Image (cartoon, rainbow over all chains, first blue to last red; front, side, top):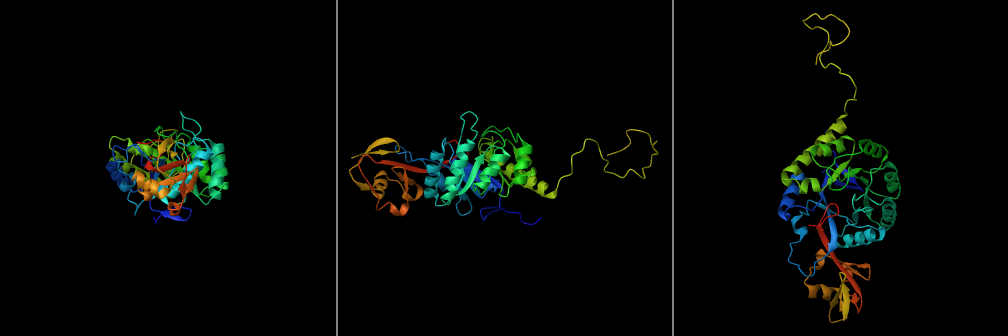
Length: 270
Length: 71
């Protein structure tokens, strides 16, 4: 296979696995996991500086910025206005105009508020941001986000941190079919096979945080995810066989040494 | 004077520039962003932007997160 980079808004990424920076046991483990994942884009949250305890090491020191592109997110924002403000602040911290846009609509499920998300996307696109919205796995809202100028769409596989895997594979497939921008499955992955399934469905990439950070061995899980994303991508490009309800022999049925009465049923070997 | 800094009242001799406030707080300006009365201030304007009595200042940085959570 030829080189197969992920291109978003004209920027080329060697890896189709995008990872988070939260919930790791330590900054050092996070850095090792990022390396094992082979990721060249990681997402970070924007929060108030702790004015009473500034001794905490800076997360940024543990991200290899020569190799890794930092994608600020608006995690934890519940209104379009908050998300827009956070995006503007993130741009100023990181000096890049990219944002993973999240506008959460419900605390228990962390499902996005699609109405506010669309509104915030329009505003930020008009301000020159490269907007990557985290959205429901709904083909209609994904189309509207693309029409509003989103540089990619990021449908969820399952609720954030749930580890349930891809709940709605057919929707992901439809979203990919209709999209003219990259589709990154964001959230819901629990283990390697989930990531592979997302890629086999045609997703251009997968973003995950919890599945790696809270694994018993985050670095080993990061390696597993890297392989799964690569395997899923290769399988997608290779073109899978159609599913069929009955067997189809893989060896020739002619020339077998044992004469078999050609009767109905049960003749084909594996 | 009293300003509101990250949501809390904060006393500082003023008026001061954003640069001076960050220096007072011992914060590296390269790794934060600052909002002055709900408007983001460009780093190049830290030296010239004056903070006055009652102004609202937010100072933020990047923290770990993929989706919602801090650590």
